[in-house]
Amino acid sequence: MALLGQASGGWTESSSALRLLHVGIRNTVGILTTDAFTQTNPPDAATFTTSTSAGMDTATLGVLSGSVAFTRGDAAGGSNEIGGPGAVAPGTAGVVELGVFINTAVGNAYENTPGPASGKGPYMSGQGTYANSLYETSNTAGAVTYTTGDSLAASINGYLISSSATSGSAVGDYFCGATAVLMGILKMPADAVQPEIVYDQRI
Image (cartoon, rainbow, N blue to C red):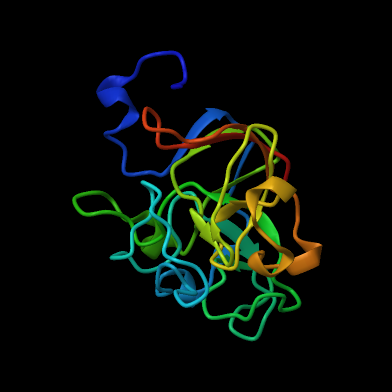
């Protein structure tokens, strides 16, 4: 089932994986870490099978649109710095979920690149409703099952993943483990018509 409404190109002509349906806070407090421009995607390619979601881009370095923004109080980050998980070990102190990045940090071909120019990476916080085409399709047990009403958490790669009991995911699949923050509640799983998950954000 697709969302009702119309848009130019059927929403397929955007370079952003995150579509803002009802907006929370566009947050620009904090500067991006160095590895927010250099991390590989996925950051941890060994644990999960690489996501096959439409927003996944293995050719682009740095945090991707639709990925989770973290505080980076670790040794590779610093005070008031934000980024993805980079090469930081899951569960590292000072690395906590903040929201979801609006844009890919390095920008896109033939577009302005405000991220590298400003060192800023706007992310959505303060709740809201979003459609996101970047999410995990696998976990350590196999394929992730998404069902309306599922809780969403940040995976070890810094992408959204279902954390509900029926999803097949386990505590070790979440970047912050047992202390993973509830990122949102799933309203609509992706399907053959619409390649996005739609959720109410809770962070």
